[in-house]
Structure formats: structure tokens, C-alpha cells
Length: 252
Image 1 (spheres, one colour):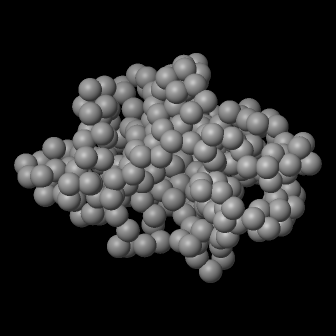
Image 2 (cartoon, helix red, strand yellow; image 1 turned 90 degrees about the vertical axis):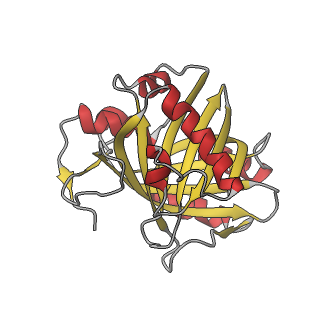
């Protein structure tokens, strides 16, 4: 599977007390993501890549008009899930994401360039993997950190493409090898007053859509007086892991 998605993403940092109201609104237009577990959520773990000098991190921090992130993504709850090799590019306000689903037992060989690994993929996955490998090699990227979080996602039934997601319990740990292995004792929560400007835990609300936000999204934002916020899980994770003096915790 090789996907190319072009969309807009509006992000908001919200307190827990607003979630119930937002959930009630979204359920009038949308359904729960089919991949959610019994509690309505699923976990996502991503391995992010960068240069020795964190060029991709700094491009985001400086809000360069044309920038990208490179990551490998897995869904820990499913042992059979493929690994998704993703390039997420931002051109001004537009997000263009390409992804390729690669078998979990083959993705490391593909990224490492081992003989025959790329050629063994189906054509669609091979094309997506090549889109990943281009910037990976061109910019001499390497694994930097793991980011894991819990997602609650809703899919609109009114629009061709519109999604609303809540991301919680975002945690990070340094990872310099080409794998998803994590030490449960080394996760660091990215919540920190220096970054989120509040002492309470925050949830990342994302509104994703094509061309323009659906009317119900716009009405909800106005009603709750939400303020759009620039937020990158990767960049917040790098800052939390490398610069902020916070305690680590074990993921339950």
C-alpha cells in the first residue's frame, strides 16, 4: 500500500475538561475510527530521523516555509501490523504526506539497503519506500527519538475527508538504532510548563481536512474559543528529552 495524502491540519492544545464537549460535537457528524480498541483509543509509536545537527528539528523551529519530517510508524497493539515509512512535508499551510506499508519483518532491511529487500516489496509499497529512501539518503538521516502516544480518532461521515483526533500521554525517549525497542523506564512526558504554558496535562486536538474546514469544525472552534497552536510532537519531544529537566516515567 502506497498513499499520498494532501490536507490541512489545525492543532490546538486543550485541557481535559473540554474533551467531553468536543466529543459530543464530533459524534453528531462522525464515527469512531475502526482501528480503535474497546476504550475508543489506540497507541502509536514513531521512530523519527534527523541529521547529526538536527536540521529537520531546526527547520520546524524556524518555521521554514518548506520543510519535512521523516519517520517510521508502528501500532504496538497489533503484532501483525506493517511498519509505515512516512514522509510528512509542509509547504506553507499545506501538509503532503506519503506513506508505504512495509512488512514488519522487512522494514529494517529496506531502510538499511540490504540486498534484495526493496525489490521484494510489492510495486505500490516499493514506490512509497523510494519516496522515503530519497531524503533519507540525500540528507544522511539517522534514528533520533521514539515518540509514543494514545490517540482517540473520529472520521467524518459528511465530508470526503475530515478527521478529528485527540492525542494524549505523549512521551519520548532517545533511540539511535533502527528499531522500535523501548525501555519502559526511560519514557519522558513532554508536558512541561516551558512548552505548554500550563501546569496541567494537555491534550493535542487536531482537525484534518481538505481545502477548507467543515462548517461543524469551524462552529465548534468559535463556540469553544479555541486558539490554533503550532505543535510538533517530534520537536516537543526533542526539547523535552534533550533540554528540559523533567522526570521520566513508566508507560502503563
